[in-house]
Length: 354
Image 1: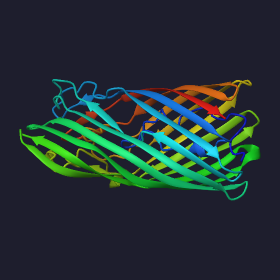
Image 2: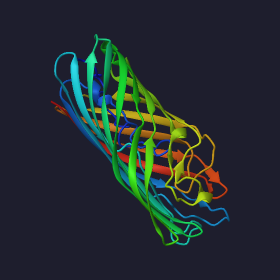
Image 3: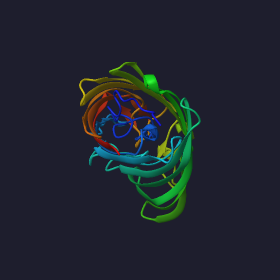
């Protein structure tokens, strides 16, 4: 089952631990591990340091509102026959962290949304050119927030688990390391036991959260024995997403919501420098779509530039990379104006072919 390029395989892990994209998208939900040869394992760790600040509705400075965060992902894949393979993938597909400093226009507002997902999937080679794949996804989501408004408001949504699925197909020409893969991720709904405190009274409810469906189009192709071009386009149905506890203060709108879907693009080139060292550069783009910012979602679109190196030792590969992002401006009358913001991401990935 020869599916990956023997030239620049696993040269960059830009699809896992270094993504900052539309909405609260973080991992990009790639399933590339299913295309690896034989038995294969990988782990990735990323560190993202955003720098986001602006002015509140009255012109007051917000200070830096975005704390740094980490990401972790990993997976294992094996072949059961020449045509049939299976994989398990762990990632953290969605997340948000904001923290307005004491004394800013939004007081001591903070929020934390976290997710973990496990995907079990199988693939079947219809021929040496066509592969189909799919599987089940189990996703856990939790959230809590403290919002300084007319009266302080807190909400804590307990962790809840929901289920969805992934399905896709790929066309490949192994001799030139060509692969085009189209992958669909379903929406996943979770129901969270929720405690809200608005004005000193606890209110108990259940908050339904549906993370959006998405489609990934990913490609790679060799252009000579040492060079690979790769890229992706990811559509996410963010316009259908809303995080809205029952008693969140109405003037601020939902805790998190988006007016538009997003399409995130990436393009890169990988080059084999020696038998043990490969390098890659990537660019990424997501258009600013307009619409109002929220207290917890104060950017709109981005442009990014990244690079990485992969060192091969026997059957193991170690990849390290960095990415710089110019984040799009966003504003809303009740929230403020956020401009000229950036983020810096670092990551490392270790893989082993067995």
